[in-house]
Image (tube, rainbow, N blue to C red):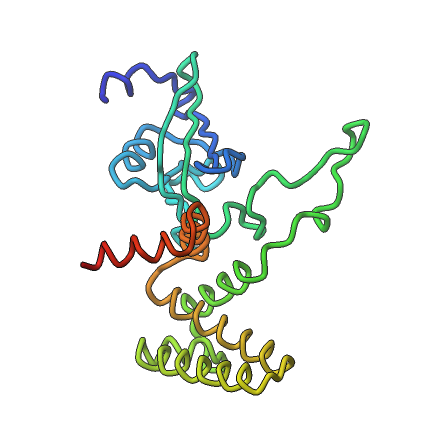
Length: 227
C-alpha cells in the first residue's frame, strides 16, 4: 500500500477525489485530499478531506452525520486523481441535495439554472435529517428532542402506541385515520432508527435485497438463519 501511495501525484500537497455512489455510480461530490486525509480514509473506512478554505483536515459528516463509508478507491492512469466509491449516509451536499451536482447550465453555458430547481429530497429522508438535527441540537420546544431525552424506552413506547392506533384505524376501515396514523408511525419509527444510527438507505437496501426473491423464499431463508 505504501508503494502505491508513493506513486500518487499530489499537486501542491493535494490530490482531487471524485466521490461516487457505489451502487448507482453517480457522482456525489469532488473534494481534495492530502496524504494525511488519504491515510485516515484508508484507516477508518470513512472519507476525510483537506479543506482549502479552512486550511484544515475534516471528516465528511462530522457535524451533519452524513458520513461516507468507503467501498473502493481507484486511481486514474496518470496517478493524479482518485475515484472513491462510497455508501452515502444521508446526502452528500451541504445544501440538502443528494449530490453536489444539481445545477444545470443554460443552452449557451453562460448562466446556471436557479438552484431552486434542484431535486427535492425524498420525504422520509428529509424527515430523517430533521430528526438527526434535533438529536444533535436539542431544544426544550422540540417534541423530537424530548423523545431522545427520554431514551429508547420512551421512543419505543410511542412506537407501540402509534402501531396500536394504526391497527384500530385499519380495523375500523377509516381511511383518513389510517393515513394520519401511518404518518405518525413512520415518524416514530424514524426516531427509533435514528437512535440506533440506522439510515433510511439501509432499510431501502434491505427491501431491495428482499425484492430479488419471492416473499415465501425470503421468509424461509430467515427461518433457516434463526435455527
